[in-house]
Amino acid sequence: MNLRKKIADSAWFNRSVENLLAAHIRYAQRTSRWQRTGFEPMDDAVRNGEPVIMALWHQRLTMAPFLFDRSLGEFCSLTSSARAGRLAGQVLGRFGFDTVPMSSHKRHVALSRIVLGKIREGKSIGIAVDGPRGPARVASTVPIVWARASGCRIFCVSFSANRVATLPTWDRTMLPLPWTRGVLMCREWKQDVPRRASEAETEALRRDLEAELDAVTDESDRATGRLAR
Image (cartoon, rainbow, N blue to C red; front, side, top):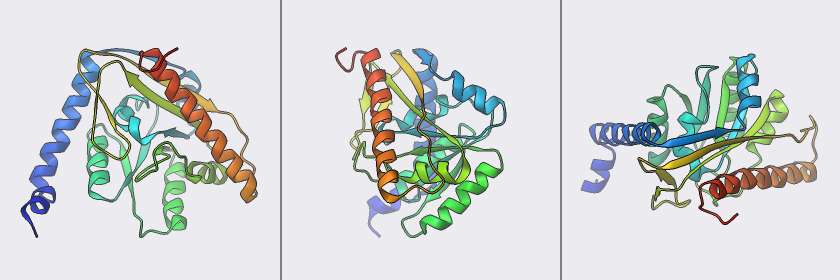
């Protein structure tokens, strides 16, 4: 085992990185001006005991702890079982989130069984729909399958800020900087998911969810000047 891998696998090193990232996210949130818009329908559903599926692009995952109000209900996030995914899961754990690691060796049926069990416990589910390896901003059908099986509503969320650091990852993960101006946005995906959707219907729903998530993400970027209006 080379030195780099030993360091990356070190429990002490990983705890230090987790603490640093969690502290940075808290500091950036606390020192910045944030506008939170469109969350009322999701908040009302969770407040009334209705679990939801929260969907976002992997690039915007860092502000997930502030995209779901844990004072209203319990939340479980899906993370990759790879090293980077475990790190993300541990960071989310520092904000009180339950996590389920996704493994390429675990059958989708087994993973869905675990997730649906969490939903039956009353927990909302968060998923980066293009994760954990991309391609970036290409949605999977996973949240649609879970919505079909559980009856949960899907809400598309995003954050943006006018000052961010872009990490050297496959999706150019955005990390907000302190003393910035940012937005947190939410929009319900209002398509009906039939219990027995055909392959063509599922693909059409996947494309529609992808477009809706692109729309709310681009809207958040326009609100912070990252995209032209």
